[in-house]
Image (tube, rainbow, N blue to C red):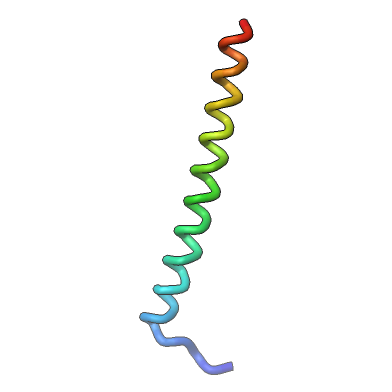
Length: 42
């Protein structure tokens, strides 16, 4: 397997990081909404 150039690797890692951050952000928003609903119920 040929080694990947540094810039290409960084590009891919940045894309993966962005995807992960987006997923975490979605989860956080969902959690906040759940907590809001719980707080409103009490």
